[in-house]
Length: 237
Image (cartoon, rainbow, N blue to C red; front, top):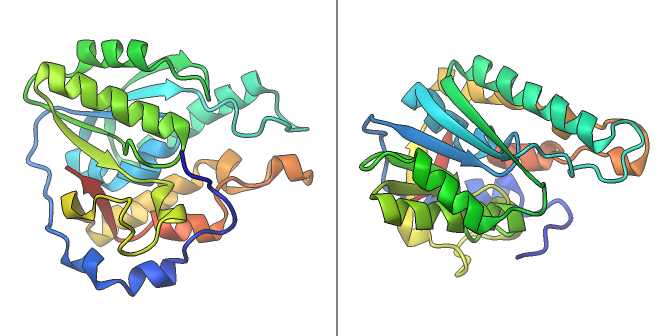
């Protein structure tokens, strides 16, 4: 786990790093795509463009994200979970993704990695594709999902793509902790990139404050969103 603090590495610094433009291009070849999201919004933040290009996906929503604002004065955890699920559905509509959604309802912050790996084995088609948060992303839920997805893919013979979300925050260009040599760049057509930006705005509980109290602050302020709404995505595969 890596500390996720402050505003993180600026998008200007990432944009000036030529290695991002030099990454090999990845075009989704078609076939079944299972996307595994630790929390509602991770699927769009990290792989919304990839999902839009795939067109049809099976989304496995591991938790309902009820712990994003543990001290909220506005929404109780159960209420927040319900809202976040609706936000995810609205975002998928904006992306134009035909999605089958499984909500596993595991505790936010308490993912059972073994149970998740078993659940994914039942859902991953042999020879298909799985996109999940990177197992080194810095957030414990993101890392648990990445490890479980890797285990399941190895068991059934599926191809794994891991997408960073919080790594853009705490890492820096040429950071040795990040497997840049395995990086692939997914260039997004302008219409897809714009759809992703609009889809991200559907997660109002995360991009806007729930209320004036500090416990209700936005989880994804503008500097964070700038790193996650580019005209391309990066996956490790």
